[in-house]
Each structure stands twice: as C-alpha cells, then as structure tokens.
Image 1: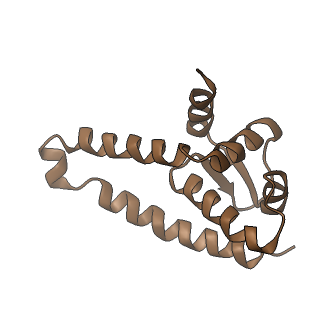
Image 2 (image 1 turned 135 degrees about the vertical axis):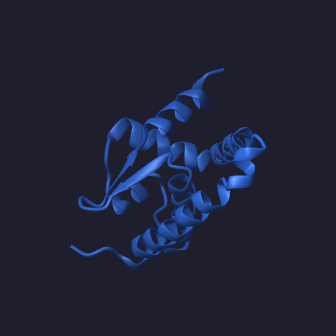
Length: 127
C-alpha cells in the first residue's frame, strides 16, 4: 500500500512547517527578554485559532472516539467524500498536525489525537 499524493504532500509540508515553526518561535534574544512568555502566548493564540473550526473539532472528535485511523478512513468519517473536498480535508488536517493536536505514525500511516489534542478537544466540549 502506498501513500497517495495528498498524504505525501501533507507529510512534506508538515516537515517543512514544523522546522520553520520551531526555528522561528524562540531565539536567543527572545529568551533574554522574557520571550518565553511571548512565545507561549503566540502558541496559545495559534491553538485557539485552529480550534475555531468545526471541521477540525470534528476531526479531533473522530480520532478521540475511534482511535488511530488512516488518511482515507479519517477523511471518509469526517464527511469529506468528493475530490473537491479532498483539498479542504488536507488543509484542516495539516492545521491540526502543525499545532501537534494530531500526530502521524509514519510506520503505520495512521493519524492519532495527541494528549494536547485531547485536552483541547475536552475544553471545546465544556460550556
């Protein structure tokens, strides 16, 4: 079984984005000026932004209840059936991956919700 083009694209984009995010989030001058707080604040804002989408909350809900799923299984359960919707699904999944709310087990090629993702999902469900 081989990865489809969307999975490969997400995987490559994620590797590049994670490197960019970690490299740009904290530098030596920020650390010296209390930048850790600024960096943490930025991270929280980014997570809230990601959690503002009902589609992404739905993806977290599915992974939380079903456990690890392949790209195709997750896409189907999330209701993204047509080719036109495949790009939308990839976009939402990439956002969750970038904030480490979802992780990809590359050897099994299955997506899972992370502990951070579970925490954020639980907060999204409280009134």
